[in-house]
Length: 375
Ligand SMILES: [Zn+2]
Ligand SMILES: [Zn+2]
Image 1 (cartoon, helix red, strand yellow):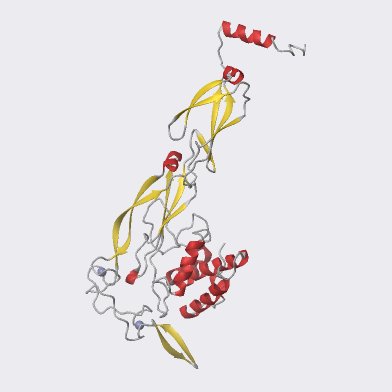
Image 2 (cartoon, rainbow, N blue to C red):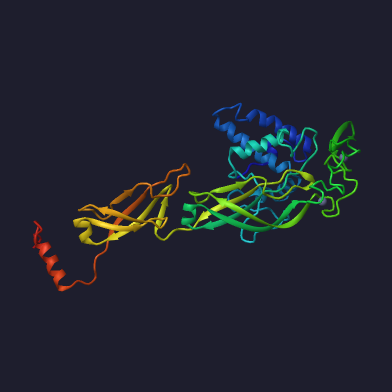
């Protein structure tokens, strides 16, 4: 459950972008992992602060939070964008914002923080104007265990905003960056007087962007982006785990007004396999053998996940329920090695026996030392 972002940043509901930014910078400095090495509580705070800022820095997200509260950013994988926040370009997949509690690791959050400090190019820069970042996109895919073993490529087709080629994303007729807004001098805000106080409000002339397009690009009408059908080949690495979330940096939606593109995420689900059960990097396979092979020992042939035939020695006296380890025939471990394959031994009892077999079994039973002692 996300905390109230206003409370997290310690700002009022009607706080200005500048106030939010200031509060964020102060808190993020305080809780930054570099300043609090190994401090879990600080790390948690740092994440909270970033999550809160992620919502409040974006006018759309902030409005959604104000209207729908947490429901707009409900945690967990099923979270989808709140109403009125853009359609779903995938049909089957989800489509939602970055930075729910479980999204991305520290790396993403640090990147987010860097952007906040104005080092990341786009985002809140030092000049104070609001540069919107392109939205992150999320899709999901279900693959077979064998695909997870070998790695695979998943092709996604969808429509999203892309940078307008004609103006190179600037939205200008000449394709050059838009000049600074004359009204606010490029800062994105103007000072207004409210009683005794001078307050900063977003520049009405450039809507806080700090730049003003004189003549709009005809292809994108000045937005810098156009909607386009896209095809993305997502490389799914060998050994990928069920529930993994892969990120393709910068492959999300293009930002309006030449800002930084969002990222593309894909959630991986692995279909249960008929033969193999996966336990971490190991695989478990059930094998029913006949009584004589278990009692006398023998050699059986199994087929591994990568369709290799493998001959396995069964020692005499193998018990039902025993697990035999076959090294290196599990899943790729992501470090160049492989997990192990475990054979779980079961037994298959014949339903029909020939007279000869019955006789042999009776003879075998007769050799038991505890012969019919219960009579
Ligand atoms: Zn302006
Ligand atoms: Zn354009």
